[in-house]
Length: 276
Image 1 (cartoon, rainbow, N blue to C red):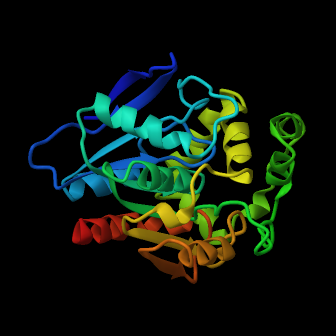
Image 2: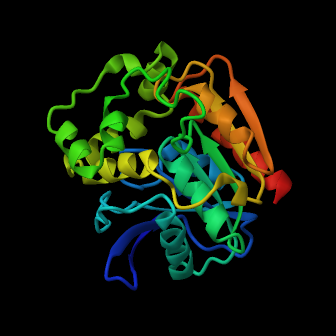
């Protein structure tokens, strides 16, 4: 049974966290870093895969999501401190991190800045740090939000006032996934959206400015999983990160997009178990 927790931080903020339950026989504790926008509540398919493998699953809503206190101006690096605070509150020492889409950078932050705690990382369709070394926006179907984020929080917040969702960011295989295995991802994203745009605005601004750490600092094993046809986070992002992470592997999924690539979650958990 998943329990919910309010984790108080030294700066007065609160993070809303989830825990599938402490178990002495758990093979691994895995922290799930949610996409943008979502609430941080465990997704059914992720929880089922973890339970089947004897993995303790924990997660939390990033600032501005799912009842967690907003933290305007946060960078990606700040997730390392938040993740460790959640782990401490739940009595967890070492843990692996898995992040989907907007969760990917935040999963990497913990491994870079808290290497004694985060022992391995999986990112699925994770965005790369902003760089001019390649066309960072190239291949994005709807890059307007991130382009606005490059101009700062005020510009990104103004964009949110008129932004309209473009369904063509998804491949047919993504839409099928949202109607099947990952239906609760869509409903959770809608729930996060009803709470307001602050979490998503702060995520996008954090992605589009310096993250607060270099990828080269991530010494732990990293698995990058990427859909070749992804129209939200193009394949060039994973390829660029592969060349900078010291201990990384890449699974390029030729038939997948941004959502359908999540079908690899069980295999990615097995990858972590084999190494950790």
